[in-house]
Length: 435
Picture (cartoon, rainbow, N blue to C red):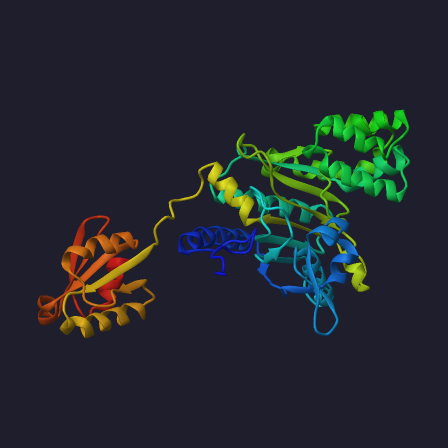
C-alpha cells in the first residue's frame, strides 16, 4: 500500500509560500517582544508528564497530551503548552538573575485536539512571561505587549478587544457567596469556561448539577450577567465583597488612563481552563462577525514555582497561536501579499563560456549578503524576464559574449523599469544600486 502524501491529521506541511507567511508573523512577534526588552528562550520538546500533572488540569492530561513511556521507563509527553516549562526554567535561575524576568519564545506545541477552524493538533505559539514584577505592573506590561503586537499588523480597537477577569473575584463569589466546597468550585470553573460554547438551556442543566439552592443559582446568574466594571462594582457592594475585590479595582484604576484601557472589557465568564491561574486572566477576542472567537489568552499565576519547592513568585504570561492569529489577519485583510518570494537579483547567462563569469559575479554579491539566484545552466533570452519575475526577483543581470568581452554587466530594475551598467568587478556599486 502506498504511503499517504498528507501530513499527520491536524498537522501542516509548510511549503515556501506558507513559510513566507510564517516568517512574516514570527518576525513581528520577535520585534514586538524585544521592543519591550523581552529575551528569547526555548526548552525541550519532551517533558515529564508529572510537570503537567502538577498544575495544568485534568482536561489537558486526560484528553489532550501525547504521552508515552520511554526506554528508561519514564512517563514523558510532547509539550502541549509552554508555561510549565518556563516556570521550571525560572525556578532554576530566579535567585541569581535580575528581576523582573522577561522571556519570550515561539515553541512548536502538540495537543490531541479535534482539528477545526482555528484549532489544529500542532501549532506554534508566541509566549511571553514576566516573573517577579511589582503587583499589577507585569499585568499592564503583558496587556500592552499584546496590543502593541496586534497593532504592528495594522489592527485597531474596532477589530479586537481584551476580555478580562480575575480568578480572585471568581473565588470570592464561589467561596463566600455560593458557599461551594473545593470540588464544587472546580466543577463550576469548568462550567464557566464552557459557558459561551453551549446553549442557555444546557448551561442551566450544568449549573443545576452543582448548585442546588435556588437562591444561590439566582446569585450565580446575576454574576454571569455582569458586563461592565460599573456593574461589577455594584454587585460587589451589594454583596459586601468590597474588601476581597479591592486588588482588582486597584488594577483597573491603574490602567484606566493608559492606551491599553480602550481595548479592555470586563467579562465574568473569562476564567481560562488551566488550573494554575490565580489572578488576572484574559482572552483576546476577534470582533469580526466571520471570526468571533478568542485568538489568544493568558493570566497571572503566583504558585507555579512551588511545585519545584520554591517560594511563590508572581508571574504572568500569555500565548498567541499562529493558527488563530493567521485567521485573524486574513479575516481583517491584514496580511501583505506573500504569494511570491522576495529575492533581489536573478543572474542568467546565455552560453557556456559565460558560466564562470556568472558564477564569480554571484559569489561576489553573495559575500555582501545579497539574495542572489544564479540560473543553473544556460537560458534562452525569451525566458529570462518571465522566470525572474515569477521567482520574485526585483533585479536582473544577463551575461553573454558581449558582457563577457566588455567586462561589464547591465543591472535591470524590473519594478521601476530602470537599468544601469557596471564593471563586473564593481561589487560595491552593484550592491548600492540594488539596496
